Length: 497
Image (cartoon, rainbow, N blue to C red; front, side):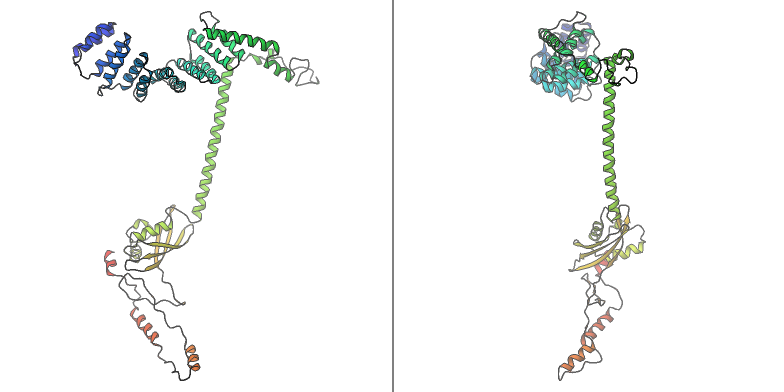
């Protein structure tokens, strides 16, 4: 980029010499060179000369320079140039891109141009959305212009009541008399469309009061129609206010608050109290207070609703806690501990000593992926879980797991092997070194009396021996072999410990 030529172009632009600025800027860069600052200023110069198509091209070239930035300003200017060149669809695309630049300092300008572009293509709804966004933009120094355009969109959509509110709000923000007269004229048209003729006449009177504003043909026709309708309405019957007062008893010699005249005096005259001297500003303030009060009531109801929901959830959680529920559940804690082979010591109670933890770990198989919970005894503070675990060597082993409350969840306090008894007697444990389930050898449950009765019933039967049956001897020998009282598991499990 030729910096000297660029500086000369900027100086000429500041002096108002637009043609001189263009000549200098044409020499500031080579053909095909990307220079966002040069193209940006070139676009501004072409816009001043009314060469909108060329200006749009210049702004597009500037957007190609990603290092230059200013995406929002360039896209907005390009959209305006395209709109002025009667290319509204392309303008909408460019202006929409400008709205996505959060660094653009004056987004209301983009919204106003976008609204005008939508109106060009007959999309009054999206145009209204754009004008509303421009009106509520805090950087907009004159929201009345956007509000007036918003009212026009409402009129095109047949929403005359909303148009009335938009024009009335625009009057609150407008200051120059010329703008107010034009807004009053638009307000009169909206009142006529809403069939509020008396208010329409009042709005048109405000618009023409100082004689500086001339109504359009459409507004003049509406003004005359509103005056005729208002005169006919007022001549045919009393106003709505007079009808209301007459129905309440005012305007007669009878005081509606004292129809029998027992008090001896009528209520004070409205002229004396100044009751009807309230102006429009007071009415607006009163309406704002009522809206604020209504909003406060809605917020209070919403807060009470949340409070009730919180109370219900709290009660449900309290009931679940009292009934022995928690998270993670007892079943999940038990299954996770067995699946880890006892290595996940975070699931053990913090109150256990190191030796107690080791005892629990030694009871758990090295690995068991199939753990079934067969029962749970729930209580608020402690719980018993009954489960079975599949062993790697085959078979299953039953366990009784004790858990205690830890916050809202559970921790393991103890694990015991559950040996089911047979025929009411304690089982005899086999001294096996494998992980196969511990089995019990059933003893002979027949008594000597039963043997004697059987022998007596069978002639020639031998009498039972005093030393006991062979099954009893086997049981005694097996009991002697298991006298050490230890339940033996395979050495692999011990080495993993």
